[in-house]
Length: 234
Image 1 (cartoon, one colour):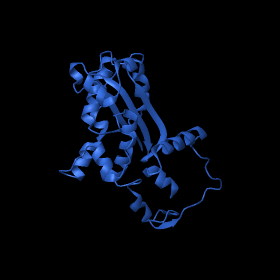
Image 2 (tube, helix red, strand yellow; image 1 turned 30 degrees about the vertical axis):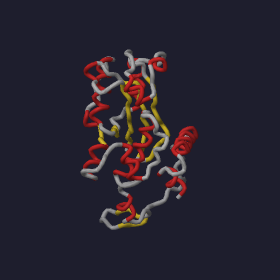
Image 3 (cartoon, one colour; image 1 turned 135 degrees about the horizontal axis):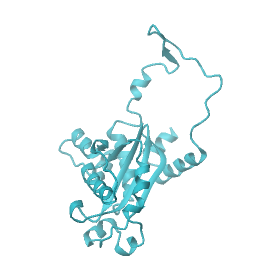
Image 4 (cartoon, rainbow, N blue to C red; image 1 turned 30 degrees about the horizontal axis):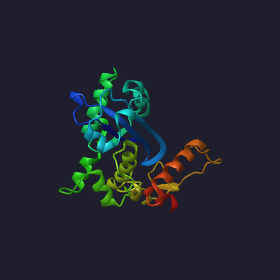
């Protein structure tokens, strides 16, 4: 199962009255594990960056001036989220509103809202009455967010991936069910479990050397205390 953990940074809060996206960060999960594939781009919003937004993101007009416009990166973004992968977003209505406004402006079809999985709503359902910001959830689950001095789309996506994993119950939500049966058994025609036939020649790995290296570098960047590092070491 392919999922995309996604975050955007914007000039403000109102996509319908001129605010624009200035940064998109996204990473790919497959069966709830990061593949190392990411999409990250800064975007020229074609307007000035308000002081308040600069204080939050640290992105000023001079930095963004030579960055591509959304229309120039739209197809790359569409390609990255292709195949109808679920989009894991914290406060999905905000990001989806901005993404669809930008896609419409660039002449592309909008993203159906039912592709979004809102971790803010999941957190509110699991912990009613408790703070559900990304920082609050990092504190709750012991996710190290010490590098989050400013909002950044890719860093926030990496943190959200760890939070999302905790919200859904761990690295493999169906692990308990999987352990309830012998992995070497499979049902026969009569429904009885029988030993699974072994392949005479093991299948070659599907992960390329480049993908394995990208995954290793991604995990190293998260630090020794990250969930990915702990699972990898165990």
